[in-house]
Amino acid sequence: MKKNLLNHYVINLLKFIEQNLSIFIKDKKPECLHHLRVDIKKIKAVISFSENIYKEKYNTTNLKPLFVKAGEIREIHLDIHLLGLFPHHSGKLIEQLKKKKNILTLQFIKCDSKYVRLIKKFRKNVCLPEMLPNNKIINKYFEKEKQKANKKLKNKEREELHRYRAKIKKLMYVYDALPKRIQKEIELNKAQINKQQVKLGDWHDTYSAIKFLSHEHFSLETVEYVQKLKDKEKRQFNALLRNLANNHI
Image (cartoon, rainbow, N blue to C red; front, side, top):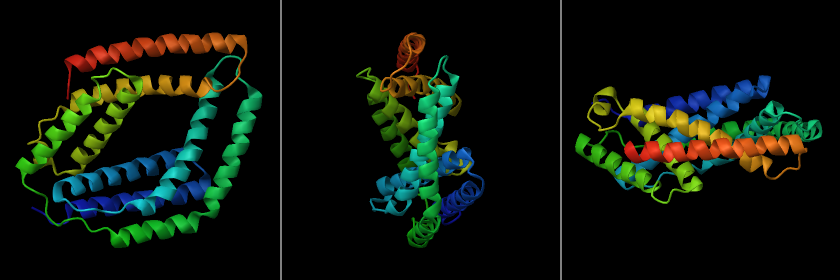
């Protein structure tokens, strides 16, 4: 077995994070913020896996400022896009959001060197175990995490479904970080989970839209549209619960 697989995986992700940070600073492409946040989530998933398996603590706080600030800008991008899709949308609100986005973007760019330093500091300090544990231990980890995820479905609540989605994403990040030969030994239906993730993502988009719009004041036409969204979300939610009840991971 090759040594330092997890370390190499994390180091490569850090390179991608630096690349996307650099591109965003130059071109302000919003997808770069999404990609770097996903890569940080992947790192945190592997760190969590290592802590669980090796009973060691690893610090990811150096990546937190970048993750949080990128998330603030990313969220506004999504809100602006969402509003633009609605009939009779509020141009005034969109302009307010654009101004807020521009301010946050300028603040983010000013902290560029700080984020680069924090990434380098994290890279310097990260040191995961050289060797992966045996397959039995890895399988046990996945079984426990699957049980934890499935428990989130018992209450049939929306926030619990959101947590279920996050747990499954985290589990798949760990799975994808492992060598192919180990993946084959893990009892995990990746094709089924990917289908679930698509449906969960569609539901979450609708759910997030409703939560955002519930805090704003709109015309009667848009209020009626939001009600249609709520009806759609209810159908998605109930269909997901039925599907997940019959197809536990």
